[in-house]
Length: 116
Image (cartoon, rainbow, N blue to C red; front, side):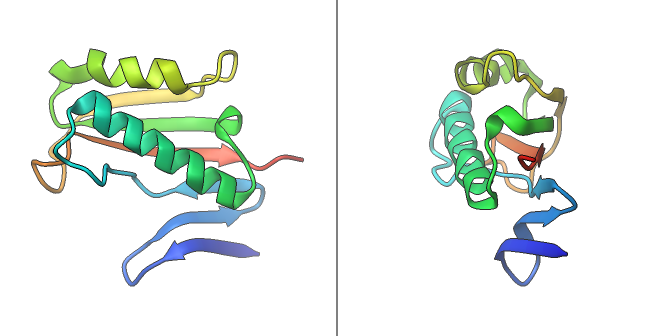
């Protein structure tokens, strides 16, 4: 069975299948925020979507972080390190990428396991 959350005409924000939750890339709602602020917004959205799917950040398997400027890596990590659950750090990749609009400074995509 496949379950989709917050489905729109182009994509779903989360897809659940076989004990795994796949989140779409998350971006900030308030693009006036700096990299740390945008990252905090994104991580809050990830928490919300994972909760809606029946899981949480301690069950994240992998994360892909896209930065519009790799020079902001430390700023993104300041928010990430304050958020990530100690002892439950996922596999992660971080790359510089041209995002859909220059207003987006960060995009994060995660895959998580469901309990049980």
